[in-house]
Length: 282
Image (cartoon, rainbow, N blue to C red; front, top):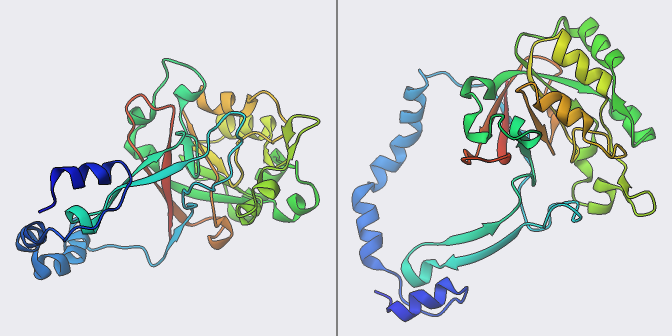
């Protein structure tokens, strides 16, 4: 077993040499065993009645220290490993990040105190029919284009009415730029704005008041178009008790209609937002 000073060194971020904790390994193996580990997938299937999606598409960007953030408002994520397998038998790391970093959700309290925080979002709202509206061709020509009511009505002409309690996602193709922070954020230092697509106030009003939605999301870093200085669309959506998701990925890999969205959100007590794992089940 490692000496206390060796463990403390690990906590300080060092990686000293030390033998593995064989006793810990033996205890873990004894508790689980190869048979128990092999049975986990079968148990998971049994817990869901044996049903499963034919395909699952991950709509989530990996969260990492180099994920693009607008540093005027948000600090870059940081990761530091503090426990090491060859010191005490396992690995752990400490992360520091803003709750509105990476693929994440904005909840009502983000716009107004007293409204629901992340831990109070209803679980049934985190599973919803996914409707994807594509404007990628237009966004390639105009980097501050917005989702419009016309786009939504054309979607309905092709796919029928938006389902009850749907989640509407804007596919602008922007997620493909995430590896290049300058291209993803398009910050204009003279105007002090960013240049990326978003949702227009008219489209937001249409979805909120004329259709039944649990929320909407974008594959950019804000629900509002990057040039909008005031978060108008955020307020319109969130103050009605709905939620938004920003920095979605791979929306071009799912159909316009027919997928089911599942949002796995960190249940942060009092959180104004949280990282999510957004999945589309087909």
